[in-house]
Amino acid sequence: MKTDGAKNAPQLCLSLNEKNKSMKDHGTQDKINQEEWENPDNWSSIYFSKKDSRTCVPKRNPKHGWTINFGSPSGARWIYYFFGIFLLIGGILGAAFLAFVIMGIK
Image (cartoon, rainbow, N blue to C red; front, side):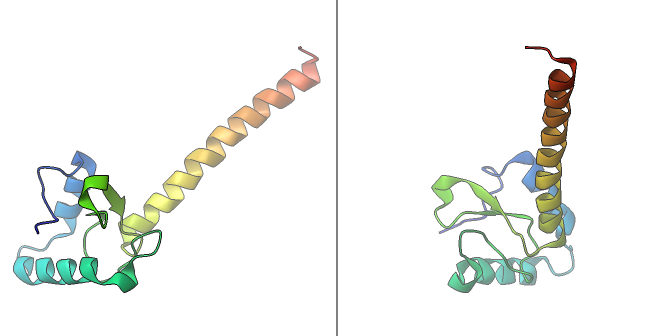
């Protein structure tokens, strides 16, 4: 079963994964990535493996799409981006609500 199909990968994940690969250790790292992906200890509701060099990996059932490897440095950055966007949107909506309340607009 081939699980790292580049044809099915989202373009963003593809570019992040290619950036992390070293041409020297290409074959060895691919084997490590596959072993880490198959290890059930790396899976809970998220995928976390520091040995896996990929940022985006297929889910346990590849038909369900892709997920982020939160063990990689770039995967951890995605957490910050995700929460940052929600904080920004929440701040904007909160400020707009306060402006309406202060101005008495109904």
